[in-house]
Image (cartoon, rainbow, N blue to C red; front, side, top):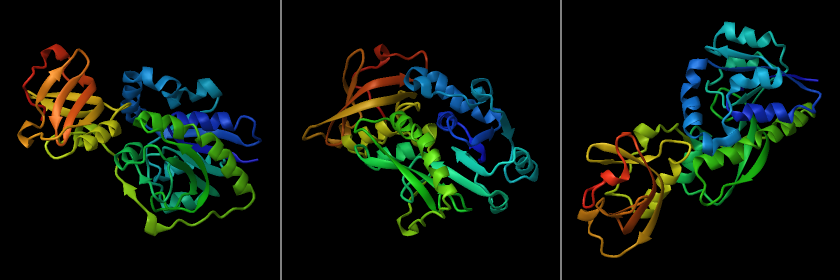
Amino acid sequence: MMNIVIIGHTVGVRFCIEAMRESPHRITAIFTHERSLHTNDLRIFEKRKEQFGEYAYDVFNVPSDFGIPVVEYKDLASEADRMAIHSFNPDLIVTVGCRDILKKEFIESFQYVINLHPFYLPYFRGAGIDSWMLLQGYAGTQQQATCHFINPKIDAGNIICTEPYFIPLDATPLDIFKVRISKLGLLLVRAIKLLEEGTQGTGQDNLQSRYYPRLFTPRDGKIDITSWSGSEIVRFVQAFSYPYDGAFFHYEGKTIHVLKASFTEQEGIHPFSYGVIFSKTEKELSVYCRRGVLTLSQIEFEDSSMNPSKIKLGKFLK
């Protein structure tokens, strides 16, 4: 029987706990980053609670839901936090959405340290992968969650096992999150069985590695109406859609977030007209863009005093 400590957050922790209920192995503790650093996640959960449904999970509910202690850590590179984890006598450390890069000293102080990475390695290393997969055109494809040993290089350890899932063509980042996070419990069960059998895993082909940085919508979500084609804008909107605040334009000095868009090709659109709002309804705006017409059908205003009735025809989105 193994004692297991999970380090991380999100509903993936809950799926792992539920998957291990019938197992002889025991999850002895959950370690997570400080409560104050959960604020943004909890804000998104609250704002998008209708879309998240049961997937909006606060890891601090684990003690009441499952009787497992949750411990906040400050710095996993510190001896104090490492010793706190050792106090639960773990045979296995499992990271699920851990925000820290584990150092060599930490890794070598435990028997097994593995990561449940819900994307296909080595092709999707890093963070913000749900959005990056949509930006890079992977909607409508089969992908894989990957369990791997952790080493000091990011997402580069030997692969223990994988679990497939499918990304729908019209998926938002939240849709991908739900599909891939639900695979982590099964992935953990399979990985433990292979560890018991003595697996050393399979090395990754680093020549195939692709590393992606974490995206931040207020910084990265600006739509380039003058340079991008309509189809490129639609893909960009999809990548910054739910659960995030949405890709955005500026209108008369105010920010308009877009969570859904469609594109219709039209010949002869002059570049000077890119961004012109030429039609609107109560729910949609239509603007000219490169190679055609962009229809914006799910719009949110950063300024609470704004509403669709205040959008004027003939103005520019920039």
